[in-house]
Structure formats: structure tokens, C-alpha cells
Image (cartoon, rainbow, N blue to C red; front, side, top):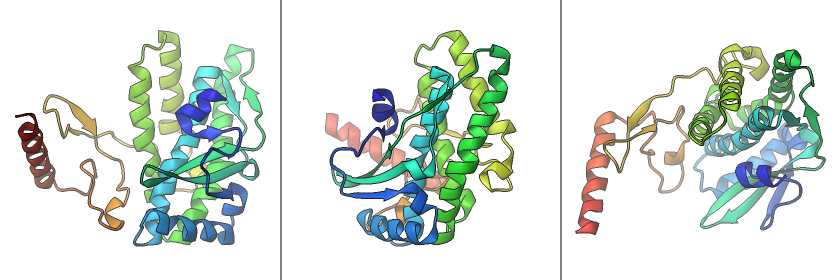
Length: 264
């Protein structure tokens, strides 16, 4: 359980510091999702409901990552039903964190027969995205008016970042191969209708851009805009796909000039 709490903010009970809590099953209905958005949007200083949609979707990516991680590393997947999943809003260092908890923890282990693992994996991922993620994010789209592709598009950014972290962390070759194959299935073979979309949202190309601070390093461009610029005092992020390259270059120059002056 500790792994899920520390890595994915998915807890066995209500996390410390929680101020507001919502049941995910109720959020899959219009009234419940509307109540969540009305509470969450002003906390993050969103200028419209669509900001709440992207921010929540980004946070929900942690739950999806927990499923993917457990699938590969533990060969056992936590059963995450909407009725047992809760969403918690927690003030943290000037912003509001979205955390999650499961009322009942049970796991679906991989079959002992290795040849049956692929079928088990496919079913576990399909079940999570079809029965848990899709109803929640589809209602989020309906209530906020943000297109489903923009909402689901927040997840690949987080997935691809952590994929790089995990693959550079000294995993055994056998586990690394399984990790990559499991993610390949999610990105390339999972039917789009599982997500309620016309296209699999994980089927994206990772675009690299020059690091803000270090010219010899690269970082991933975000897959979709997080709408930070639609918050009070917000702007386009450095890694935003909507930011023009000349503006990105200007930000690098300004940042490095300021950093250089600070070290002088």
C-alpha cells in the first residue's frame, strides 16, 4: 500500500490534510461532477470550468499509472471501481493537490500460467479504462464543455515521463521488456471505443524540446495544453504545445541570463 500512496497518491484511507472529499461513483453522474467542478475551480483560480477538467484529468493520471505499474511490477492489479474510489482536495504549499483513496483494497493476480498473461493484461486494462476511467472523464467533458480528446490528452504526458523514469532506473531486463510491452499494448492496440473516443488517446508521438536551463538536455513537450494560462495570473507553460517556438527560445534566453546573473 505504501508504494501506491507515495508514488501515485492513491491511499487506503482519507489522506491527511483533506478538506473536501467526493465519491467517484457520484462524480460519474452530472450532479456529482458539477458539485466537484464548482468546488474545485475556484480553489485553483480557474477562469472557467475547462481548467478544472484538465487539472483533474492530470491528477487522475496517477490512478491510471498505479494500475499500469502494478500490472507490470507486481503482476497483480488493484480492483478500482468508481463506487469504492474517492477524490480528495488537499491544500499544499499554495496550491490544491488532488489525491485518491480506495475504500476496499483487493487485487486481481495474473494467472500462474505465463501463456495466459497477455489475455489477463488486456482484460485488466480494458476493464479499468472502460468501467472506471471512461465514465468519469466522459462526464467531466460533458459538465465542463472541454472536448474528451483534450481531457484524455493530459494522461500521456504523465505516462511518458514516468516511463522514462522507470526505464532509466535499473529495472531487470525481463521486467523492462514487460513494462514496454504492456505500455505498447495500451498505446497501440487498445481499441479507441474502450475510451469512448474515435482515437486511442495514448497513441501519441513524444516531442522533445531543448531544456529551459540546460542547452545540452531535452525535455518532453506536453501532449496537450493544461490550460494553466486560463487561471488567474497564469501563462503558457514552457513545455506547452501552444507556445510558439520563438517565444520558447526567448524564455530560454531570459531564464539563462537571469540564472547567470544570479551566479555572478
